[in-house]
Length: 260
Image (cartoon, rainbow, N blue to C red):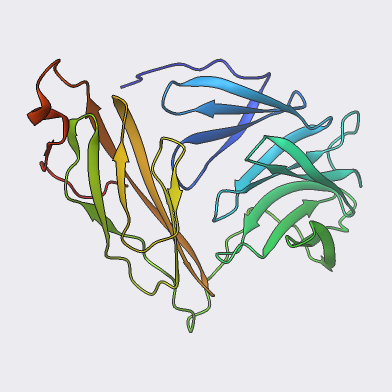
């Protein structure tokens, strides 16, 4: 069932969702990337990449979006590709890299977010795989390959990836609503919480008080040296009844567990 229709740019081709589920980035062939707020299903920003984007991925921490395609004005199969890195905090272009070897037709980021791979097709047969170092957003290597297509990254079998999970003592209640979050993630060395109301924490088991009524998406992003993972849930804060203090600090524990 279609619940909403969002009007974006001309000729949308690919979409990518941030790990916390709050934003959808849409690559539009008409030179733009549209940013959609999933809470309201509206376009909140438009990024002009000044080229023709086709492929798009979000890094594991949700801080950058990588978009790739042909440079504007050039036909498919020419040596005129590009990759742009977009910062998600302000939806602006951080860097744009020229791609030698044809038109990007595949894009993938490693689980640790350190490398982006770009498959480039060329009608002359001189196709390539570009390797991007995300620490400085530059092309660090180019590998000659034959007839590339989509890219899939196979995790190192010796790697131990984190698995995000948590619960909350309440999931619904009256404002101000105090919520205790309890981490149950696996293989984790770092925790980054976003409570959905502008507040954040790096504690493993934080408590947070929601002051205003509304639906809030609480997100936990965990990490270790091998990668990241995320989990999120919805906290519903109801408007307190006037003069009833007993309702303002209470909450419902129905479910109380994380959603994904």
